[in-house]
Amino acid sequence: MTQDFAGKVAFVTGGASGIGEAVVRQLAARGAKVVVADLKLDAAQKVVDAIKSDGGEAAAVAVDVSKMEEVEKAVQFTTDTFGALHLAVNNAGIGGKAAKAGDYSFEDWHKVIDVNLNSVFYSMKYEIAAMLKAGGGAIVNMASILGTNGFANAPAYVSAKHGVVGLTKAAAIDYAKDRIRVTAVGPGFIETPLLSTATPEETLNGLRSLHPVGRLGKSDEVAALTLFLLSDAASFITGSYHLVDGGYAAQ
Ligand code: NAD
Image (tube, rainbow, N blue to C red; front, side):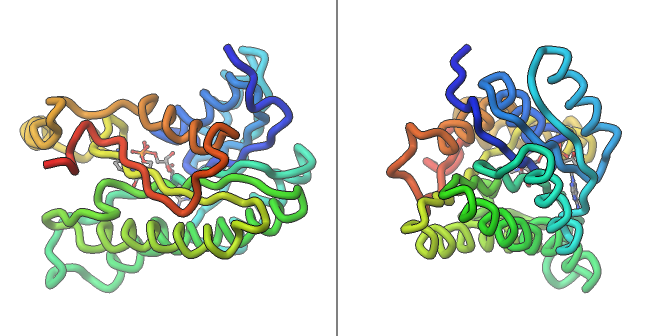
């Protein structure tokens, strides 16, 4: 296993499950010290324990990414624990209620925008401050294929993910000269608890058929792209949105 993230400190939100967990495990396996930040502290601690038993370095912190002051504390925990911050993956997210825009309640709309979009602003605000002190860094924001495509019955999710892509571009331009790269990843539908716990098998079959490869993606496939974007191999890549979607958007 290459150790290309040795000496780097990474902060991953939603790191206790699904895509975030795969990112955390791959980063730790490649030498990074990783903070697993999640609403579910017990689940985050289990991921940390597994990394430590494999000889890696990691720590867990509880955070609700929709609350700015909690995000500030979680980033502070990272620099207090490991001395700096170099890499961040703003990944925590929820699916939200399935309904048309006209049937969305004010509360349901704000919940999805808070957890999936405002959280990325809060996270970048504090991550960038820490990365400026470290002399640079790399941020990956977990958008979605729905960061550029529409989808039925998901107005808040689609809007939040389009916002994440826009925020990524804006921040990338503003911090390029500070050696902070900011990119977004757009997964197609991925086999994770977010998808499988709330989706009947018949609907999952329909989702599979939306991908020319004929299946859903895997968390490790999204993590592989995310790690490339975090790595020095991606040194000329910033402000861009990268699909990992089994051909979904090519149709
Ligand atoms: P998941 O449900 O498996 O994991 C999400 C994690 O985020 C969980 O550990 C959860 O506890 C945490 N979380 C939720 N709300 C939080 C909050 N307010 N504060 C802190 N942590 C919180 O989901 P996943 O499928 O791995 O999704 C990860 C990201 O990928 C999300 O942003 C999602 O929108 C995006 N995504 C997922 C898919 C998919 O098909 N699964 C497709 C495209 C994009």
